[in-house]
Image (cartoon, rainbow, N blue to C red; front, side, top):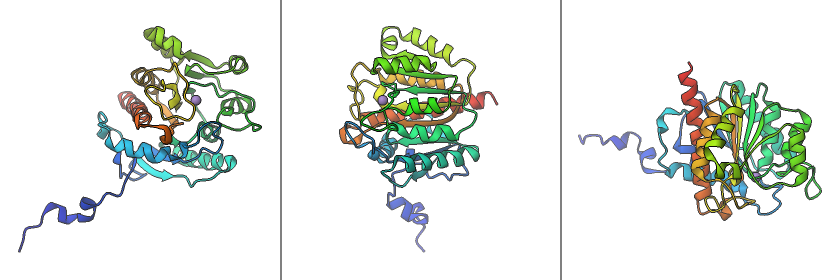
Length: 299
Ligand SMILES: [Mn+2]
């Protein structure tokens, strides 16, 4: 009798690649602390569409990066929501998904898609202790191109519906005077990209102070917060952005407070050389790592 080669026991898995899945995980929902799902939606794109392809490219990139301490985070990949061109349908489905994930005691990690999806998730979550957004933009227009719910207005719609006490936008640099005035009026705190560039340690201290004592953070990462030189593949590139290493260090501060949910949006693979996708994966990864490490330390 010929001895059994180890691969013969699971030869289908050994020979064939069935991916991609986020960081290559095949964990079940039951076994995971983080439940990843994609939202292939870019129907309100005002400049360059294509972020609907980001969930796929983020998964592919995530399988090729050498991420630190990968084994210590328990992640499952649920797949993508079905595509739709309806903003209302997308918002409803995102809301239902995050509600079910949080009810099961897990942390949703949403792969956009355009930023509008955050308006679907936050209203369905009770007990958010703070909203920290990394973004070049404020997304506080009243309307844009004749619609009131789109990727440039979602934060204004969210805060009109329900004021939140701790809303912080980090890396902001591209906004109208009106948006700035509305943000100020609604109590939104800013850490601008110039502040981060000119005095990084000062920015660290400021973000540390702004998030001090907060927990159950909703973290929303718009990859256009990065300079387009680092992350060209976004739908609305704005020069003067921050560097990836600064983004990761700032994310670690926020995520260490403890995450309730997270989304990572606006990567656009049609304009990417895989850099924006790689930066996005690292950002999501450091967030999960910091939140996990801090929660197991406080147990
Ligand atoms: Mn943006």
